Image 1 (cartoon, rainbow, N blue to C red):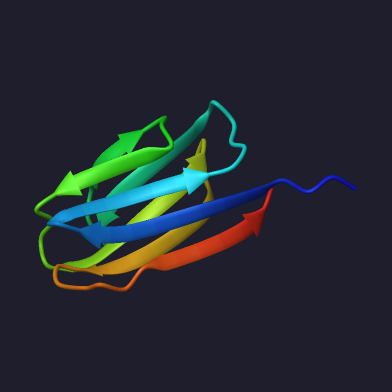
Image 2: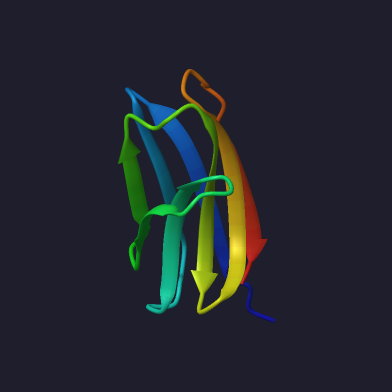
Length: 90
């Protein structure tokens, strides 16, 4: 059985919040970065999205295909140096 691994990394560095996925993804996958319970700030069919000078609060990165969320990760901003990594088989 073949297993493809996709890794999501969310980090804040130099006043920029970055969400990226590494590994094989479908061209239809969408990466979204948004403050929790708010509208999406960035949502693109790319493997990296960024927000400069994010507002304080909990931010969420979502990897979705259509209306189905495949992976998600959260980070507290600003001032947080925590990095949240998640792995999921695809």
